[in-house]
Length: 496
Image (cartoon, rainbow, N blue to C red; front, side, top):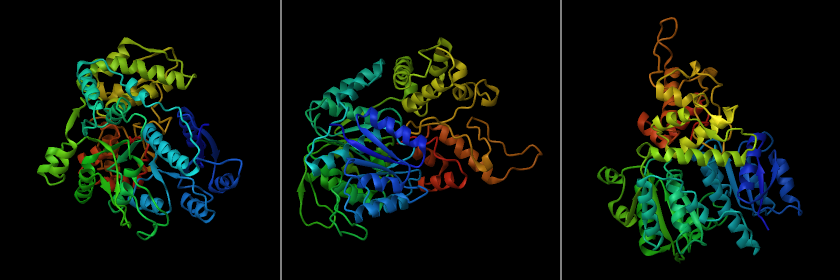
């Protein structure tokens, strides 16, 4: 029997996209357009749910109120909250209200998959009813689409890593497929039928790290109204994937090192030590050696995690993989959306893609293909279907190119350009587009210049917000605040 997912969002487009994503993972979904309707659906005995995807901001009652009402009614279904804002305050409020996990819109498919699998597994344990999904871990290994020598070497290392429980550190730029490689290693290992749990170390609020990793007892701290098992317990017997490990605060690194060395954890508020059997795979887009020199990363933790390093080359260093990847993405999107006409790509368009440096790597290429499929009116993708890529490769103003401007069509797929901002103006994310004077010769307002600079940086770095913030010389929280302040939205943000 497939697991039942309740999707609660007042945006009909979001509901449809999340339903499609859940269906592709093998789950059945029921949709609700608000909190009141969701509570009514939860109270119906005819519709028991294994997990709930709950938007935090809705017009009738918000997600936090829904979770409080659930607690009053003793509804224990795991709730995965959806928010367009990844701020610490939002996350803390959601976790204290009893959220099982949280996802920042636009939701990355792999992140959604991991969250749903973990939530459904918890429900299965509670009810004693086994649920199934269409996810086959071996799929991860088969979807390593590449033909270059450098990726052949990566495949060879993956096979060797899968043959043991040795800790693996995967290094590479954002968008190169580090999580996919981690999943492929798990899929080929002796732990293939065990849990694969993802922890995004860069997204955990510092004061919740211990709770999220090791769990907590009810009443362990203010707002801890329920017991939480933690990611280590979820991954027991399987693999814990520590993504963005370089973003973990130094104090938390000490506690993580102790848990890895001892193979045991102590939940917050508990005096009971629990043994865990976990295989660790970590990933980073940072230079951890430089982090050690700067005092941002512990040397002892580095050597504990970096037993078997795998370096993933960026897409610009393996352009021979681009034709294979393009063919794969065209076929994939055509299967998912039959209304797309394009079944191939012209030689000129392919040459254009191979001439681009792809700062967002495979993730950026994938979304460029999706946008082109949306724009294309023929059977073959042409250069004109890639106006943003043409602008970046040839230094052309996108307004001079044929075809409508590229717009985000699917929030579940990330890495789209930001095109609207202060006072609704269009922000051109292209080199040399930053103009200091307006048409009358006067200096433009600083807020407009700063908004354009942020929009350009998001596009230039493929929506990788850690890199964007670092290059702009500001913190991630400041960057997200400016996105809201300048009305830039979140369409161009990739899941990291």
